[in-house]
Amino acid sequence: MKIEKTEVVIIGAGPSGSVAAGILRKQGRQVLILEREEFPRFSIGESLLPQSMQYIEEAGMLRDVVEAGFQYKNGASFVRGDKYTDFDFREKFSQGWGTTYQVQRAHFDHVLALAAERMGATLRFRHAVESVDVSGPTPELTARGPDGEPYRVQARFLLDASGFGRVLPRLLSLETPSNFPVRGALFTHVEDRVAPGTFDRSKIRITVHPQHVHVWYWTIPFSNGRCSLGVVARREYLEQFKGTETERLKAIVAEDPSLSGLLKDAVWDTPARAITGYAANVKSLWGNGFALLGNAGEFLDPVFSSGVTIAVKSASLAAKCIAREFAGEKVDWEADYAVPLKGGVDTFRTFVESWYQGGFQDVIFHPNASPEVRKMISAILAGYAWDKENPFVADSKRRLGVLEKLCAA
Ligand code: FAD
Image (cartoon, rainbow, N blue to C red; front, side, top):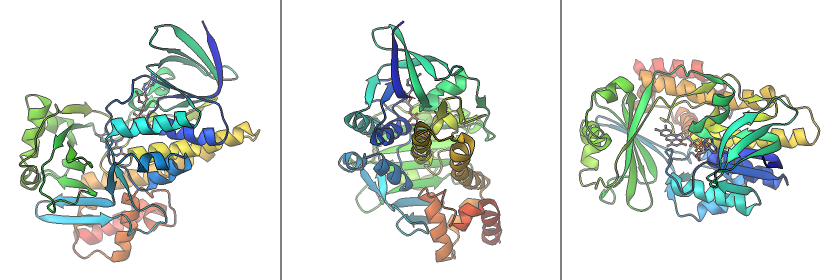
């Protein structure tokens, strides 16, 4: 079997893989990306957070993203019954980007992958990684391209950016169950036909179901008059609705008067899809000559649109560790990669758990919130979950717990 050699091999050309490739190319590294699909291909995860812009910029891909014509985003709005609140991410506690985009992922991921290629990475679509061996001094994998012939790749370092493909967690038995209940989502794209002025297209709109605190909908407007529409709920709730995925999604949207009113003229021209049990975790985010990026490691929950931000943050942290390792330094991957990455993920986890219990919903809909506290919350919703200057990051469980009690009173 043919053997190729490279410095860094990356499995998957989603946001984590392409951003890692960009940063490594800026370090002058030889990079090979193997992507199972042909791009553009559909992917879920369309609302970015401003914090992600820092890593897109670090990867040298900012201009590619800015010039792609995506929908400008400056915040998030929340609706529950007759209550409405919104957060402008430019008014936030942490320093850094306050705006970002809402993106069709087929296009966005393609833009990033082509940017990585422009920067000198070798990018191969329709090359699936089938097996890995990390027992030797350097990692090795076997892949198969469109000609059907398997080949081996030896690299100094292997990054698994395979997302829900979870290549290394499966092959190396690294998977551990998430401690979240099994939730699922039904989603589609519609031509929304929302009259101008009735809806702030520069914000994701999160609608809480009028009766069920654990059921919520997303509406993510795009720049072309269309929007992504989805609902997230526990599996048992979704299973009550029968029919095609589109019929089920329509029936659940009809349960919320404000959302169904907003979308009354929408054209449902794309069959809905379903995904269940996406929350995932691993025993370790790294091992002998490899690290897991983005969703190949842990995936929490979509409610705060944190997935792509965590993915590109992981890419940045891992690329820095690789730079040091290649420079001959001894890198402690637990202390320098896993622990810092998980710090922010755990901040999001605290807020996600509180969201589903209803406490964080009471906080954001509270009519008399202090402007300073709102700025701290806004920073977290904008993705600045690693900024320890923010008391709601440094001590998130306790701080949020106190705030929940105040807002419930
Ligand atoms: P992916 O984007 O999944 O990319 C992985 C790539 O690896 C894919 O292209 C795949 O084809 C490739 N691959 C897989 N297996 C192999 C193989 N064997 N060989 C080669 N290539 C392979 N995040 C947000 O930021 N905002 C949101 O609004 C949002 N909404 C979401 C809604 C739902 C319902 C869900 C489930 C998730 C949502 N997310 C959201 C999360 C987001 O989808 C992910 O966090 C993000 O895509 C992770 O990026 P990644 O680069 O790790 O992996």
